[in-house]
Amino acid sequence: MWCIGELTREYHVCMYELLELYARPHDPREPTICVNEKAKQLLRPARKPLPAKPDVPVRENYEYERAGTCNLFVAVEPRGNRRLVQGTERRTKTNFVGFVLRLLRRGYARARKVHLVLDNLNTHFRGSFEEVLGANTVASLLSRIEFHYAPKHASWLNMAEIEIGILSRQCLARCGSGEQNVLAAEVAAWQKRRNAAQYGIEWTFTRRDADRKMSCHYVS
Image (cartoon, rainbow, N blue to C red; front, side, top):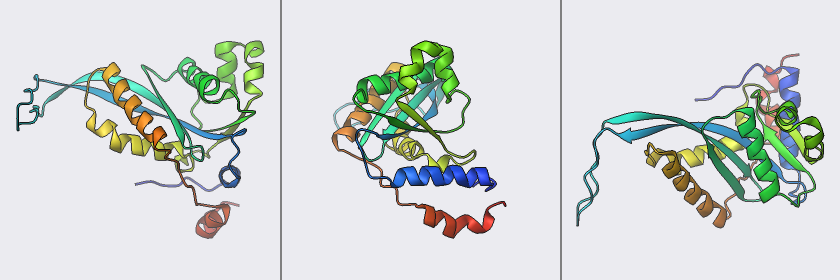
């Protein structure tokens, strides 16, 4: 179940900006990359599973023990058919800045400018980069980033949520390990398969669709 927050002018101006960004022709020199995080609870079996035998699968007890949580950063370039997922113990400013640095230096080092789509989490702003890296150090980096924000209570406009949903169904739902390194290996294998298959996201919801469906609820 999902809902849309109050459709203020601020809301639909931000929505228009994102929908216009998504409608632009794909340009590898200025890729649009959507980023978000997902918390993952780590679980381990309360009893050791019985190993598989010929014609008998592994048998596991239904009881489990909580083994803490971890965070997954997810970045997806919908039209470039690429994604990057990285696990961290937490989701602090330092973790977020480190993830974006890795994204820009490894995957998009040749990009002239990166359009970064984010939600309004307090770590997702320019100030985080300046605080972690220093204003002088980060100036050249920030000159390559154009920040775009989904309206508050409108995560449906961030395509990273679509990718996170696929990750949850195809990988996380069946990975019940209580070890973060095992989870990281499962996620890396999933990421490699999807990138090799060149899966992208086809976004079809336009500004005209938004006005047709929601304009009667816009707050003057």
